[in-house]
Image (cartoon, rainbow, N blue to C red; front, side):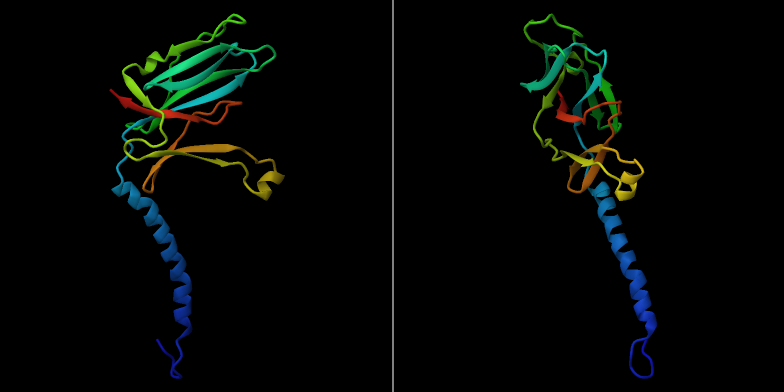
Length: 196
C-alpha cells in the first residue's frame, strides 16, 4: 500500500521482517520432515561394539573382526599392569528402532603366554555381517562428537562428551541410542547384519 506521496508504507517493512524468518524456519522444518515421508526406513540392522573399563573386569583383550560374513572374536591374554576392559556388542534393530545387547560368551581369563583364540559369535548364527561403510539399501553410519555446551557450560562444569551414532540416507537420519555405562568408550561400527 502506498502513501499519498508515492512511498510504500511502514507496514510492508514490518510484514517482511516478521514473515522472512518464518519462511526460513518453515523451509528447514520441511527439509527435515519430507525425507521421513519419501525415503524408506533402513532395511538392515546395525552391529556396534563398545568397551568399558573396570577395576575387576576380565583379564583378556577382545578384538572383533568380520571374516567371510561371520563375526569373529579374537581373545588374547591381557598384559600385566594393564587396565581390563569389558567388550559389549549392541544390535540396532531396524524393525523396532531400538538397541539391545547381543549375548556373547567369551573366556574371562587365559593363561599367560597362551595363544590367541578365534571364536565365532554364535548369537549371530544364521546371519551375515557386511563390514562395508554403506548398506545395500544406501544407508551409511555416521558419527558426530559434541564435547562442550559453550563458555557458560565450561565455567559451571557442565562439559560433557557425547558421540552420536546415526544411520542416514538421502536426508533421512535415524539416531542410534547405545545405553551408556560409566567409563565407556565411543561405540564402534562393526557392520550391517543381514538375514540369510
